[in-house]
Structures are given as structure tokens and as C-alpha cells.
Length: 139
Ligand code: ZN
Image 1 (cartoon, rainbow, N blue to C red):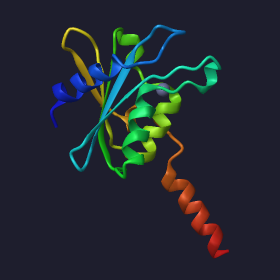
Image 2 (cartoon, rainbow, N blue to C red):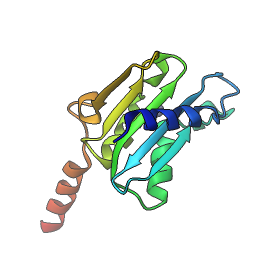
Image 3 (cartoon, rainbow, N blue to C red):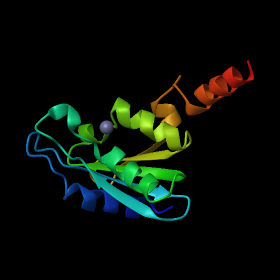
């Protein structure tokens, strides 16, 4: 995995952000097991709750194109503060790979590499619910 390339793609995606309300531009790029990269940007809405983060945009693009095995995601923002994925994005990342690498652009060429498992400890995991559903079928 080329971290620099993934961060570069996230940076490119940030330029396409639709953020007339906050003015904050975030980009994300996901790398799939198949070796493909999908980019996403934040997309805001006048009804603020309908806005979507760059991370989820990129993940949803990958999944909608048939790629569910996501190896890594890079997040780029002009400020380090803006590259910390929100709770909703962390939950969506976990859905597709609890070992997903999360690369945050920290400015001046610094990148923090961690995993979604570390960013969302003691999480609500899809496996647990599926086990409960299957157990219910056996009753
Ligand atoms: Zn988010």
C-alpha cells in the first residue's frame, strides 16, 4: 500500500468538497482489496443533518461499485482537527473491516496510521448482531 498515493488522492478529492456552510474541505480515499481507489468529499446541505462526510462518501462509492473489502482509508483536511473521523464514519468503517487502516493527514508530510478497531473500541460490531439474529432463528 502506498500511503503517499492514498493521501494524495484524498487531497484531490477535498478540492471537490461541497461545503458552502462550513467552508471546510475534507477529502477521503479508500483502497480496496482489489487494488482500486475510490475518492470522496464532504457534501453539505442547507438541512445540516443531511450532510455527508468525505469518509462515508468514499466508502459508499466503493460498496456501490461492488467493492466491500476495504483495506485502508486516508483522510485529508486543511487542518489536522478536521481529519479525525466522526462517530458515524467510524461505525461505517468498522462495518467493512475492523482491521481497516486509517491514515490521517497531519500536515507537513506527517501521516498518522492507525486502525478503526483502535479508533472505535468496545464497538457495536456487525458480527455480534448477525450471531444474535442467527441464534434467534434456531429458537
Ligand atoms: Zn464523518
